[in-house]
Image (cartoon, rainbow over all chains, first blue to last red; front, side):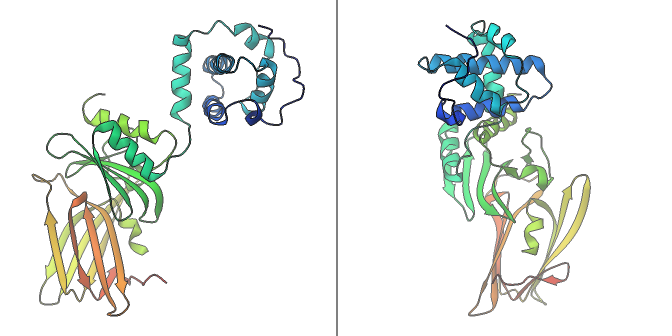
Length: 204
Length: 108
């Protein structure tokens, strides 16, 4: 594999031209979350390079390198990154991938998030006055997740509660603070909600 | 709507006065370590219902949602309050809705 950093010809006008946009955006946004953390940055950078080369062997690495450098935080010196390529195992890449995907992805619609949550939990999704309610089986009261298009002056948010008991923040902590318990929907909301549910159910 | 700030608060007290046809609700909203108390007054109440299908006693009563819509033909409000989930709440009809003395205006 030739990893020399030659300028691609023709030069890509954007990363969309040479890489799957969603995948690339996930990685780029993940990388941006850790400015100053050199080790984590290296890990993520190595992962995305290796991932890209695996999925797109027909592409020239320098083109990808150049395009990603336009997106990510403080592009590092190329030689160190290039030398590291190929040394990254799947196990080493996993934490970086997980961290990157946690903060990114396409923002789901309320209906798709409700459906996906119901499917993931064995729960049932119902329409309510401003969105959807998903009732997740959990003891006698269950867990109620309200995934809302609108309500109370807010749009596109969700709430997780055990009715009669507690409502939770995105960290899975019980709270009566509306600012913390009305949670904006984002790309990682399904995994965020599943994590909250796991904590409620004693999974840490 | 001025009542938006109540969403997610805690219902601390509910008072029904049949002689004056009013329902007064005290809601505490806590945010950023600060708490504020609101009084939601429903006047000219012609219909009022409380229902609950959540098993057992509650740790507290969450004032999850409040929605009110004005019927232009009668001038009366129809209100719906969600307490925790659709399994519990209050609903009814009244002539005026006010929050701490400020009357709720109909949406344009």
